[in-house]
Image (tube, rainbow, N blue to C red; front, side, top):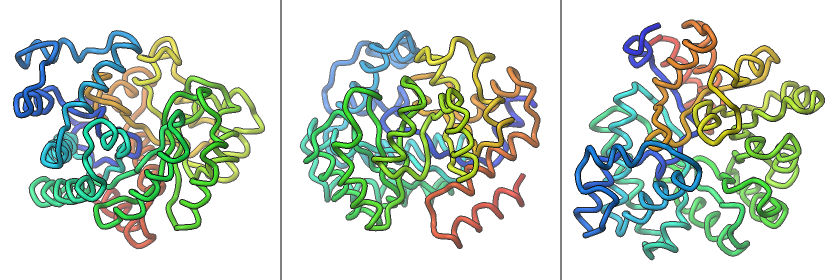
Length: 334
């Protein structure tokens, strides 16, 4: 399939970070608005700076994008232009991870102002671009228990802004998930489903950890489940969705080259897999490009892309009636 054909396909994305999707154009607007000095002063230079080099550079770009958001109006602009990028890829439904506590710590934007900005931005994006943006509010492993509790309180108060789930991110192995166990247990009791980053930079034991201590309903990345056959069987039998991000895994050296990625093996094992872009602005591959690269590397055809897309639609953190409607829309539009 050509890039153009893939771009036209209706899509669903479950694993993408709002801050990591900040386009160079958006960052330039925010920097000019707030008088922030950037590594480049024009768009072309900024695009060149954005190109992924290594993990420290990834952190630099991600941090710069986050720190450029100084007020609620900035956040609303980021959300709105994120919606525009969704429309460019015909991504009908997105669950984007957003780290509200980081923005609160960096810029002091109160929780209620952040919630209102998310709500205004997604409503404008729905009206202008006909894309549905929902949010996963995440806890970063390394942050304090109190900050995790703050994030849960934010999520529970932001359902009208489009929050549908609670997440866990951060560097695997830096801090035990168990320190946030009570927060995730409270999230589940309050009706918030959980997705957790695991099985990327650390092995299969990381996945077992988030199943036990974060009560994860979905696994972000998860590719290293293949290290333990009994874990593969457990995930397959339970139908646990795995949000796979091939380009991200290559950039961060989890796998050597795209053609070596275990995505085909995960599918062959009968696992519930979707394909996602993680931080598309930084890693240089949006969801359409991700699908194209998978077709080129693995010989995927439209049927496999349909399976990956419907897996994502079925795994969405939506009420049953909305989830069925999304699946119908994908099937009818394919």
